[in-house]
Length: 209
Image (cartoon, rainbow, N blue to C red):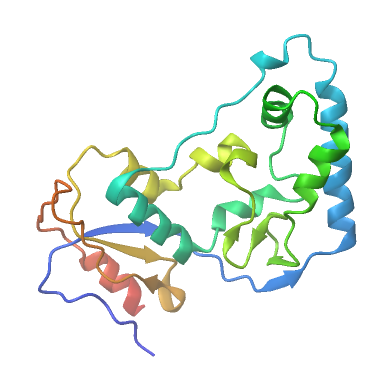
């Protein structure tokens, strides 16, 4: 079935992202146990630190305004292609877990471990991070490794870094017949929105292949 593309008479900015097509699968007990062991070992190493406050990684904020709308739409269509690198450890390291130690010095290793294990969903995207559920990451931003909060793939990263005023935007996720295309995302009035002509022929050509 041919893909439905946005109205060619309208101008919009194309943002391209990859797309994962892996089905969801149950989380095995073995994966959960590997996560548990990783957390306990990392917390054990963290206790050896002399100045734990110097290890704490900050929680990177989400994009704001219209960029947040574009980012959320792009990540939803992508279905977390970048999350596949998270594996059973989800990039959780001493810097991430140090947040709990500094914020709540009285919390035990077992309590921290339980907080994370309770966030593991029953089913996850196949061949992806243990916290990659059907609707995205099951961890609150404060519990994620900072790389998960601040990483954006190539096309989305360029868009987020851009200082240009917001304009109508369309997300192209994936390639060929598996490509998914968003509706035209329109900035709200008063958000510095503007409309400029953009060449999008190459994206239409890719969609027809």
